[in-house]
Image 1: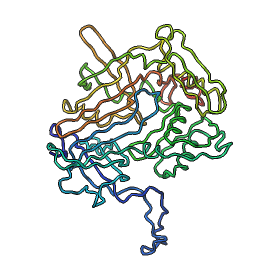
Image 2: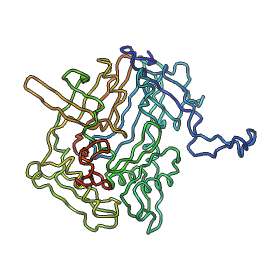
Image 3: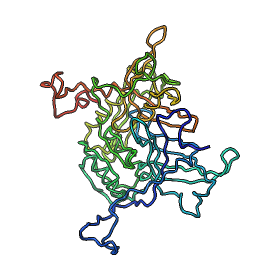
Image 4: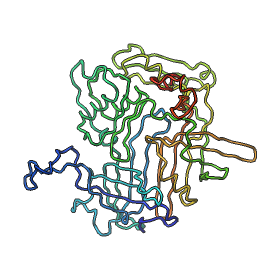
Length: 433
């Protein structure tokens, strides 16, 4: 059994590639008219991309996961687990072919969209196994760039620390520099949120989570092997723009899911926000959603180690948390849909392209029964899990409400009040999210 193609569709074909010959550090650039090929001092390879070696025909199974549950959560590192045939011994440790530290890339070669990478990361573990069903095989586990750099512990420096007043994007760069993460493997967007000084002394993953919570932004590892930072409004969308897909029933271009989950969970709700800043706020600020508490009791979101330099940012974080997860306004939501790529070409297309990364996929989900419309809403993709074998490809998509990130701001090509909008302030800032 192998996985060079799916048995149920020719619209997409999986690929698995192992990166060899790459480097973890940025190297100097060799000048073509000066450097000498036989002089190791100046004939330096100028790239950090590996040589990608296709391993698809060795494949048995592929499991991929990325994203988060709610769009107010911080991102977890994306992961991949691939089981490959090793009957030829190509992955034996003695050959140094497959080892932790190498890069892994997994995706789909699509007949319309071309090559779409679903995961890229660093091999974390290699386990050779033998089972009666698969025979001699090797299981390869990998994590994205966020997981790779996030495991680094940074030594604490003396007070008063460094970086007072720097933007959150500069704080992310400072952390990456300290962790010796290559400059060519970063995608850091500018942020206007200023930070308190830092003394490091934490794991990189924890520091990134604090920066993301302090700004209302996100830090994640993307499908190009980079660490990405986005500021507060990165999920903002214009409601007149078309959605990326429609999932449900109702005909037309709608993709029918194998399963959907509509839920109303109390542990999803927030009726009290307790927030404060490191070494500044002696007592954290407490904000109550009184109507929500009367309905659901006390459901607390707490973050008392934030690094935003102004207390006004705490109010913005509070407003967004209540707007997305507030108890008084909460209703049941479509929290996930399951797609089976064997059911239609549309399911293959959506499974190939759906993503929680920038630009985040926006999906219209609807269910219409004889008793009426059960739901019809726009949702943002927050996480995706793929499971692939030769006979099956399922795509489990986590979703969250899109409405809190809808902007009423006008665009240059639209006459919706362009002369009334405040160009210098984002729409979401104006509505207090």
